[in-house]
Image (cartoon, rainbow, N blue to C red; front, top):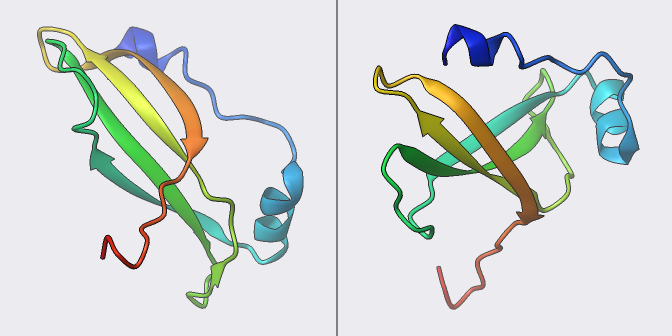
Length: 101
């Protein structure tokens, strides 16, 4: 990531909000992301799209119930291969049916 872009990214300084965040905080769980390249978007030079989902995992390895949301991130790169900008959208996570497995 470029220094300029990194300087604009800030971690939230708010308390956990929403039931999923509160439950994960109660169990000292951390978010375990799962990220794959998103091949279902138009290819644009200098832009990579990835799909991200996550699970909340306790220190003992228990996976907490979580929403079925995921995010699609769109990363723009400069000529040096550094991320210089990004956007994302939150969508409902696609669940495979038994016929798709």
